[in-house]
Every structure is written in structure tokens, then in C-alpha cells.
Image (cartoon, rainbow, N blue to C red; front, side):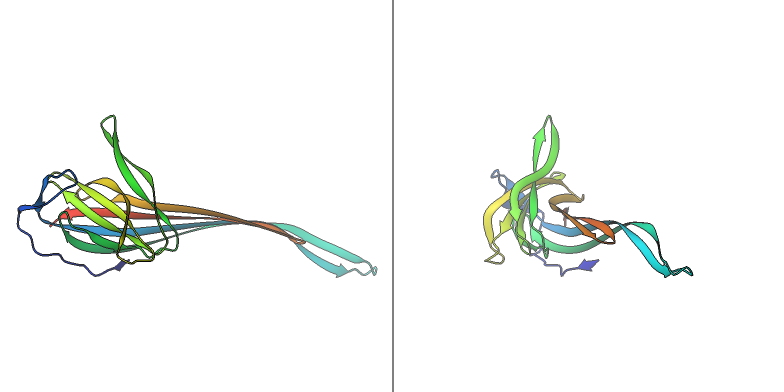
Length: 209
């Protein structure tokens, strides 16, 4: 597990600071944003082939002996990378994501009184990141604004993003991606197929400091 440097904002007292998305005053407190990237790779290989041997018999004839062999291999691997940043309530912090695959930001909404978090339409390009702006009103939840970064302009928001309502102190998925691949090979000695699936999740946890 790799930890990035912690970036500190100015020390804050428990008073009133910036205003949130709805215009309400926000407590002047520091918020710690923890971000972890969780990657899972699953590989499945199946194949069948013929193991043949040619022998010359005592009668001078050629004899062919062989057997059919089948193979089924499954492998799984997971990695996690974590970073932290400390930011003033209502201010923005840039989160860099060193990934080779694009990610979709999540968004939250209420339905029948229940909070739902689902995939949104905003796409994060591979190797970029997002601007995170937490707004905490003193309750047990934080509204986190996520804005996609422009690939051609590091640390600059594109203005396109989503909002996720997070419970304080809990890990919540804010972006994810999933890719599948399937390859088949056929030859004289048999055939083989290989399928893989790569899943990547970006989770965030916020705490008040």
C-alpha cells in the first residue's frame, strides 16, 4: 500500500467560513480527504490439446499414440494505493489518479427517502484526476463536488462533474471502471481461450479535523 504526502491547509477554528452550494454558511474546519484506488484483475484460461507420440513398431509399422489434455486456470490479483489531503471546508483540492483506464464519476440522489449512489455520465480520462470540493454543514454528512480535470491542462477543472453525498468517516465509491477481454486461439494441436476482467474503484472517506 503506497501513501502519498499529506497536504495541509491553514489551521482553522470552529467558527463560520465559506458558503456551501445552497448559500448556507459553513463551519470553518479542516476536512481530511482520504482516497484509495482499488484494482482487481481476474484471468481465466481454458485450453485443450493433443499430446501425440510417433513410434516405430517391431513390425516396421508406424504407430501413433496420443492423449487429449484439458487445462483450466483461474487467477485473481488485487492492489490498493492510498493518498490523503487536508483541505479547508468549502475549498477545493486536486486528486491525481494514475490509471491507464478511463473512469466514470458516481452521483447520488434520493428516492423514496433513501440515498442512492450510482454511475453518472461524467468520464475521467486515463491518467488524469478530479477536483474535490467538500461542503460540510456540521451534520453527519458531507456534500462532495467532483469536477473532471482537463487532460491538456493539469490541475485545471473542466467544469464538468457530479455531486455525491457521503456519510462522515465511511468509505464510499466515487468513481469506477470495468473492462473485459476475450481471446481465442486455434491450432493443429488444439485450441485455447482466455478471458480477463479488470475492475477499478476509487473510494473516498472524509473526516473532520
